[in-house]
Image (cartoon, rainbow, N blue to C red; front, side, top):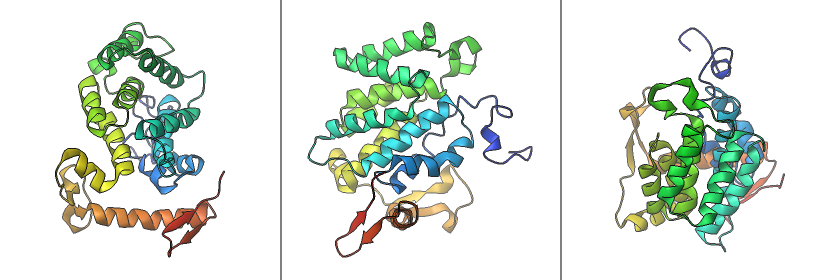
Amino acid sequence: MKTGLVPPATGDPKHNPEYDMIDAQLTTEIFGLYAPGRPDVAVKMATLPIQTTARKESEWISAFYVSMFSLAGIADSSLTLKQQLSQMAEQASLELPPSSYPAAMYRYVKSLYASGIPWEQARDSVYQRYQVEQLDGYDMSSRNLYCNGCFAAGINFASSLVSLFYGEGDLKETIKIGSLAGWDSDNPTATWGGLIGFMLGKEGVENTFGRKFSNRFHIHRTRVGFPNEGIDTFSSMAKKGIWIVDRVVQEELKGGIDLRNNTWYIPKK
């Protein structure tokens, strides 16, 4: 960007040698919430933000997360949260080309969970398979990068799946496992914390932790250029989000809104 490039050129492998490292996680998942039940539209809306930094494997991983957030909008409430997340993950995994290493990671971590071994052993198996043996086409260790590519999209995707599967829909357990698993551990914890938190709702999150949380957020602690000196509220953000969903449902999905019954009508793909 400092040389004058603008997205999506900034994530093009011709210009960005780290296109497969940064998967745009945390900054693009919200597009899934804006297109509830329609991952195809959510991923389409998120493509430019994702391609600001990512291509190929890192782009597909981002699309997986976007799809998860989109599917949360139509999760079957008759199922347990664990069952809902399992169904959502299976559908979102269709964003991963079958022969790609992200797809192989998904299958491998899922098999580790199904085997019944503890999450700590699963985490160690992920390390051995992908950072020591460099299997399934994941060759990041051979590049001799800082901290062995601990911030790379691939290894953090595998790690995030450990916390997703073993967390079994328990918000605190999922965050705990994601934190202790290591690597760039703020990402999986924020992703799954945000997803499960969305599904539980504000009251559900507060009940989980047995406390009330502040409604104010100081954006300028880590970002710049926002109005009101960076002070916003989560309720205000949610209201803006609802306005966006209303427009997407009508203009992109060609659906409708029933204000009386507080319902969106969303056509199937």
